[in-house]
Amino acid sequence: VQLQASGGGLVQAGGSLRLSCTVSESILSFSITAWYRQAPGKQREEVASITGGGSTQYIDSVKGRFTISKDNFKNVLYLQMTTLKPEDTAVYYCKARKVRPIVREYWGQGTQVTVSS
Image 1 (cartoon, helix red, strand yellow):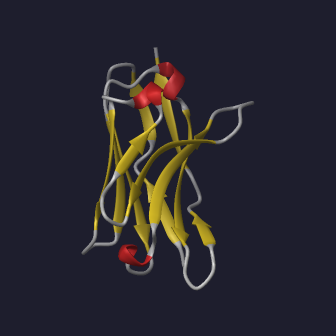
Image 2: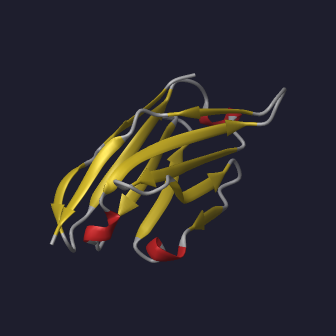
């Protein structure tokens, strides 16, 4: 399984970006897919997740600004980010998790998001 993240870049505060994560097999085979981020000197944190059935969760700091979604036909996971803040600057990673027959997790390579003030 391969995950390819893209869409990062440099944007001014208040701007928007959309991240994409292309999955090499059916995204429906994963129980949950998610976006994480890691800022310099900080631990990696889960930003948003979406289950196979479409239920979503977000960390408090991005609620109302970020939207996670997926295209089950194109096998792509998205993260629409709006009203970006400098504190959103980080490397963003996508992750996909299977639970059958055993629990396995797969990570994308990361895409840099830099928000200037």
